[in-house]
Each structure stands twice: as C-alpha cells, then as structure tokens.
Length: 342
Image (cartoon, rainbow, N blue to C red; front, side, top):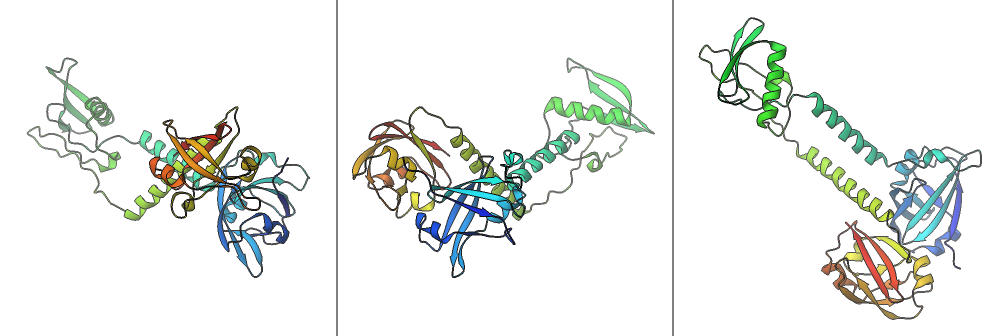
C-alpha cells in the first residue's frame, strides 16, 4: 500500500519568514521555480503559501509567515509535513515536550479571525445605536419644546386619534425610536443621537432628523469585498471538508490550470493509484444535475494522474470558478460523481 511522502523540520534560527525544504524531498514535487501550495494545520484549516526555488535552495515563504504567526511557532519545536499531492501539505506540530500541541486544534486564520471581530464589532454598534436618519411624518409625531419637557401628539392604537402627552427628553427620544421601528421608515445606515437636530417652530412643523453626510471610500469597499471573497472560499473549503461517503473520494481545490489552458485536472496520487486503472481509459463524470460527461484518464507513474479530453467541456458546462472545491466520489469502477462546493 503506497503511503504519502513525509519530511520533518526542527525550528532553528530565523524561521518566521521562510522554511527550507530538504533537497532529497524535491523529487516528490514539481520542478517549477514557483508554485502556490496549501498548508493544512492541526485544526484542519488551510493556509496558502508559496514554494520558491533559488540557488540557495527551496523554501516555503509568502503565506508561511501567517502560518507561523497564527500557530505561535517557537524555536526547537518539531514539525512533520505530509505531502498529499497537488501541492498540498498536512502539518503536525510537536512542542519542546515531544508531544503534539493540542492548543492548536482550534486555530483559525488571522484574516478570518479579524473578519469575525469586525462582524462582532459591527453587530454591537448596530445594537447600541438608535436607528434614526429619516423624516418623521407630521401625522406620526408633532412637537413643541417646553424647557426640559416635550409635548407630543402621538396616534392611539387605532390610528384615528392623537393623544397629547408631556414627556421628558429621554422619553421623547425613546418614543422616536419605537415609532420608527413601528413604521419601518429607517435609512440604510444607522446614526447616533448626536446627529439629530430638532428645529423649534411654533407652527407644529414636523421633526426633521438630519443625518451626517455620507462619505464613500472606494478603497474600503474593495477591502470589504476581499474579506467577503476570503470568507466565501473558507466556507466552501469547510463544506468540502465535512463531506463523507462510504465510497472512496478525494477533494481538489480548483486552480487556474484546472479551468483554463491547459485544462488539466491532476488527481492526488494516493486516490488515483489505489482506485483508478493503471492504463489509459475513459471515465464517466456525473455532475450535481446527474448529467454524464466522458473524460480521458491518463495514468502517470512519476507525476500525478490526469483527466484531460472532455474535462474542458465539464468545466464550462458546470461553470467552474477559481477557488471552487470538487469532491470526486468513486461510485462505480469507472464512474466518478463530482460534488461542487462553490
């Protein structure tokens, strides 16, 4: 039974920005000078990094710095890398006590953690803000300011009569908030009470709520969109990781060469060598709509097995995008059911 290749590294010196790959291990991976790789940590979540080759050797860099920081790696710790094919590594981390670090089983990416903090902060801000910023109808509330109290005319339960009430300012603003919630007449963005200006007139003019001028930051919008894209991809990856089946299956994250020229799907070695024929053959792919697609399976002894002839049509027919995850489930000897997580 073929097993995945492994190598280990003891963290010594400056390892925060890059980490060297053993020379003898390079025979298991591509000879390209630069490749994007995926590092799966002890928590099951993935970090993207780069595999750069130079005259000094081959190094993990780029996103490796984020991986090292998120896992709080320390000198003399022991890392074991398992190569799963298609530039994907599974990493186990052992502390100086020679035991696996169990505190890393729930680590998440720094960007995702910041996104959760932004969402939580935004939620608290919305809950603590009064949803003001609209013009109240003169039929809903009319006012007359009298020292520290306000006389208001508010509609009764039937909406036909108005009741004259004398309220303190705090109760007055509370009445505004409840009235706006009832009529659902709020603007898109919440404002605080400091943005409210009440014009005192003697002829019962309607109260006008004057919002602060809107400021548009295009760059900020782009940053938010990037966070959204990152979140969507993380959700797709998590959904693919939760997939289970009684049949053999493998998961592939779609890269550019999968969905554009040269349109080649490379299957992980452990799956293809164990479950697919070792001679050139035609496989049937079943998409989520149960439509059948014929593709050519080309086995490789040194490199990874490939799906070609017919794979471009499958990509276009199912509108596959960069960053999607495909789970190939072997339901019959020459038939793969493809589950797509977008």
